[in-house]
Image 1 (cartoon, one colour):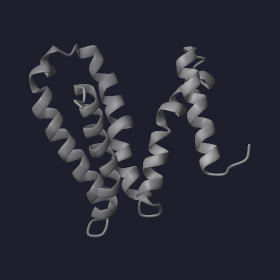
Image 2 (cartoon, one colour):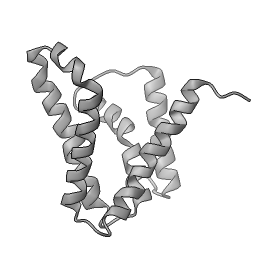
Image 3 (cartoon, rainbow, N blue to C red):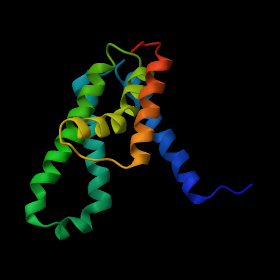
Image 4 (cartoon, helix red, strand yellow):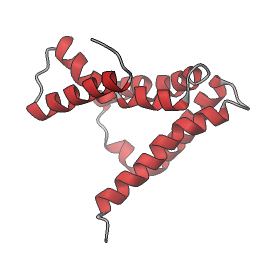
Length: 140
């Protein structure tokens, strides 16, 4: 049976993304959370620089502020916060909490910004919300 290219990409991404939480936990044996977060930022910056070097010049100057805000909130802080969190919780718990980000994005968008969603977004958000609470035996 031949796998389609998109499934191969999904499996590879899942292995890379999922293993990062285990690697954070293992690296905390010999490094401090600040060192782990710093190394994650350095390595990700190098990779992004190598991949996107030619495209940087095409970004409009008025977009740089939003790119910087997105980078700080979406990459810089989580790199350190996950390292600090995994000093107290298991890497599997950190991965599960990270998987709730899309659902929380939809819910915060609805509650705070009054952003409407499509039926499929609402259905997936409801699915993961109830699945999370049922797996963890939390009663609403």
